[in-house]
Length: 145
Length: 68
Image (tube, rainbow over all chains, first blue to last red; front, top):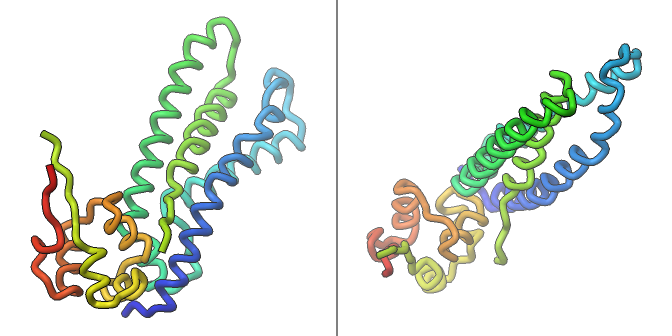
């Protein structure tokens, strides 16, 4: 049973999510430079921790993209947050992310002839492009009342 | 010729003095969905169109129609 407070809560959370996704994308994409440059040198412990943290951060964002979050909300609120419009926006976001990742891979492939790219760097760049493009494209707009 | 799915949702909702949130509650969707359907931004599924028709007490073809 849907109540007015469920509708209001879902609206509020959906608006918050729409604002948050582009910000997360910006935070995720910015500061990527620190992961490149010393790939041929032996990894220090701090590098391993940083790379692992980035991987965890990527997985968290992918889970958020795939599910929409709201895990600690009631079933009714989650159902409202996962309505047809949201699913359509997510589909668009995932398609955008897929094409961004494919295009990035296509660009990296020939570039690697002149500038050697390690497997880790290539995966990092492709994941960043895919997730970075999918997050803002998944954000739905909320119209006026 | 491109056809567009138009609707009379706003007028029918106003007739019944329902806010978007109230109609959303009746149908079991978010207010955003009602808003985007009403503005023609989003084409609803058949199930949602039927739910809207039931909530407004109208046949679905009185709410949604094709526009050239």
